[in-house]
Amino acid sequence: MRRLRASALLYAVTVALLLGSISGAVLLLVHFGNVESERWLAGEAALANARSAIHAYASGGDEPVLDEWSDLFGKGHDSVFVTVERVGMLDRVKAIGRKGDQETSIEAFLWPVPAGGPILLLGRDAGALHMCGDARLRGDISIPNGDVRRGHIEGRGFSGERLVEGKVAVEHNDHIGDIDADRYARIRDNCSRTPQTDEFAYRMGEVPDPQEEASPGTPVLSLHGKRTLTGMVLQGPLVLRCDDSLHLGADCRFDMVVVQAPFISIAPGARLVVQCFADRGILVGRDVRLEYPSALVLLAGSDAAPPTLTIDSLACVEGLVLAARRAGTTGTPPVVLTAPGSLVRGEVHAAGRLQHQGVLRGRAAAEELVLRTPSAIYKGHLLDGVIGPYDGGRASGSGGASENLQEIARWSIPGHRTKGA
Image (cartoon, rainbow, N blue to C red):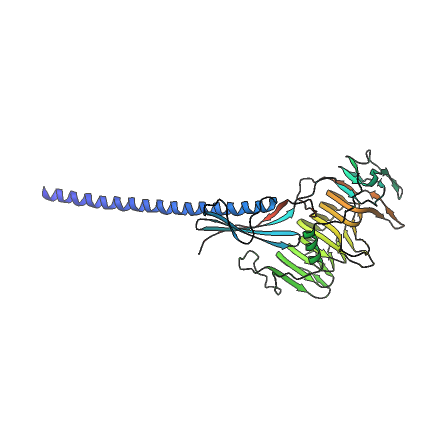
């Protein structure tokens, strides 16, 4: 009997030890699970803090303090660190959010919010507007004297029923060529190919990962002499700079690349996401697609010949088309040409002449409209060109003085890391 009781006690102790071990293991797993859950939740909160900081910067309201840690709620648990870098006409905003021992970094690229108002603005010396062929204005316009007429050119009269499908505002528009000072500085520096303090050079095949935190700035690939690039794949943000004419082949694959050269041409059929900056001319070939957020920017100087920005037929540009004049110069104004069958989703801004025969979904501003034919140049004529409001696609504004808001063009992939890890 005593042996049986001793055995039972041994079994009881053994079972108790096993149950205790299992219970302890379960409690330990639950504890570790809770710790990991808390770390994950803290990481998500840090990511939310970083996103909120970028949204606050884009809104133009109570912007976060740049280049230093900011305590969000005054309790020392939630803070952000925000830096801003220029990438062409884009703002590259990087935010690091902190929650407890968790930090999350994220980047976004910002454009100015498209300007509202009339779909067409013409300068005070533009004169009467003659509508010819299949030209259509589907929105409000602002022109001097409000003079819109039916035109007849090259044997073609106006085919529509209404000259303007909207209101006609009588305004002189004295400052069509004006651009916000910060935006003009970006245009000048990029079109002049001015080196920036935070850029660094690299050779072909040694492109650093732009997502690496150790990247010291914007990488720049410099080319010399006339160049034709074929089969090149570049993932930005980075700058491609050339000191002479540059031709981009149809098989090039560029994403978030800033291209700087005196003259830039893009071969027919190319598919790119680029910002092109030139001072002698830009030529976009037939059936080219420049996806959002892209930009074509031309800065005219004091040359006798007017620099031209041409978008060929069937080409599509999603973003900004801008031809500006260099401050303090009196040279021939630039010319923007959109061929029949072309499409621009965004804004066309010409501090000079605009010949528009394609489709624009957005807004156009120019000193005057022109139409060049084999026999003559006609001022104040719109032949077959269509201008209508934004159709829901993303677009970019020129950065006028009244534009303070920015929209997020693209997010980077977020990454979590533990402080001190």
